[in-house]
Amino acid sequence: MSIYEWKSFSSDETKAFAEKLGERLQPGDLLTLEGDLGAGKTTFTKGLGKGLGVKRTINSPTFTIMKEYQGRFPFYHMDVYRLEDSDEDLGFEEYFEGSGVTVVEWAQFIKEFLPAERLDITINYKDDSTRLLTLQARSEHFEEICKEIIV
Image (cartoon, rainbow, N blue to C red; front, side):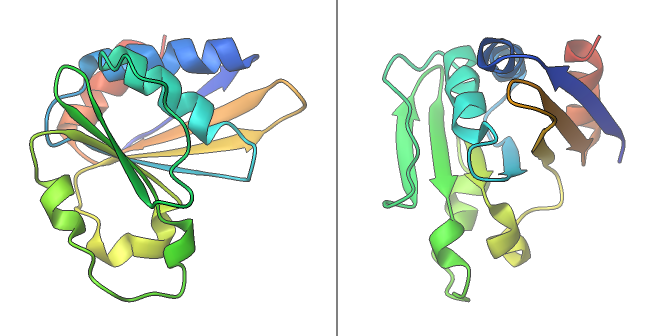
């Protein structure tokens, strides 16, 4: 379980980094995204979607909990912030073990449902334009991807 860090100096750099990551993902991959409001989680997800071949505009599913997009395979974008005080099983396993890639914003609110093998990403502010992305690879698969994209 290694931790990798990467600094982004603009939203365009964040998108390009996430696109490189998205190009390497496979069906069944799960990524979690944490960070303060406005840190760049949706910006990151837009780049990820581009790397997965999604053509539609990606925006935050804050009020719908999940949005589904089609690229090389299904891409599920979840924002589970509104589930903070819920212990209801909403069938997340179907997505986590399915034929697509899933990214979950605010995943700490459903941690009991998360599979062990995943890539945890935290985006932190450094200043107005700089972000520090911390990636925790929780499988050999994600270790290899992190080694490829973090130069």
